[in-house]
Every structure is written in structure tokens, then in C-alpha cells.
Image (tube, rainbow, N blue to C red; front, side):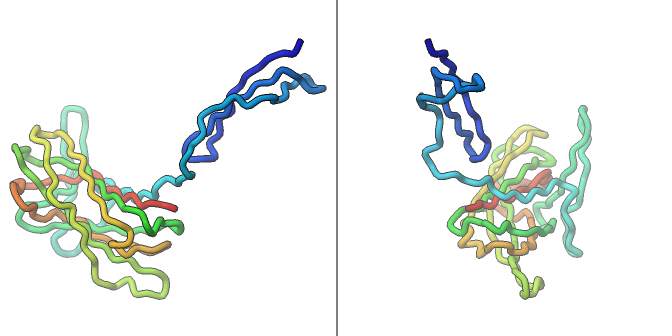
Length: 214
């Protein structure tokens, strides 16, 4: 009488794990089970996708322009400290950075911009707006070129003091004009929303750009 065994094979080759189930009632000459019948399993039905490229900038890791920099501040709480780039409501203040686009950017995809932060003094029903200026250049092109602008639109704020806001907005790769291996320079600032602008500083604690890959 044949022996029966079932087993699971898990692979990390794909972005989604593939799990295969099989059984056997026969063994080979070494006593190992031979697969006789495929039982089924979890197999992705869509095409394999790659994780987005991410550009990460925590407060304190930015550079600063010579004019109107958003100052780095350390806020102290009961359980430690947090760093934040303070952005004023009356003067547009900036942080700057740079990076390189991946070689396999999805030219038909969408870029996601994400920011964490909180109001220095929380208030009810207030908004901010974040503006991302960028310049994308490749080899044999001058880095010293004008910026293009993408704007978040109104971003609503949590009304309780010291609670974090997580903001996000998107733009297509096509609209941004980015290409594989481009060198990106950027400036991030706070600008006025259409209504209910927060009075006083807003502290950005982290900024991320997620770039789709093909």
C-alpha cells in the first residue's frame, strides 16, 4: 500500500508568494516522495509587479537653500523627542534634496508623494498645502535648470495637539516628465491652501516619494 504525504512549497520569487500543494503515494529508490498529483494552491492571477522605488527623507536629512530655509527643530515630549522641519504660514520656507530615478520606472504609472507632520499649535478645521518643485535631468544635461511644480491641494489637519497627520497626493510620471535614471533635484515647501490656513508653524517630520516600477 502506497504512502501518502502532502507538503507546501513557498517561494519568494514573485512579489506575491506562490504556494503550491501536491501529494504522492509512491516513493523513489531513496525513499523520497514523488509528486503524483497537483492539488491546487494560491497562485497570483495578475502579472508579477515590482515594489515601488522610494526616496525617503526624515527631518534632519534634508539640505537647505540659502534663502528662507525651513529650520530644523527638536520637539520634546514625555517619552523622548522628535525632529521636524518648521514651515511658516506667512513666509514660504523650503527644504531641498536630490536623488536618482530607477532604471525601470513605469512611464505609464503614478508617483505618490507622502508626508508626515503635525501643527506646532493644533486648531480645529485647519488645512495646509505642500508644494513639491522638481528638476529632472539626465547625463549630458545641465543640472542648473528651472523647477517644475506639483501641488498637493488642501490637506486637512488633525485637531488634537501632537497627533500626527499623514498626507498623500499623486501625479503621473508623464505629467512630471520623469524618465529612467534621471537625476532629481527638489524643493519642498508649505504654501497657502484654498481655505482655512493653519496659523503658525507646521512641522514636517518625514517625506517620501514612491515611484512606480515596471
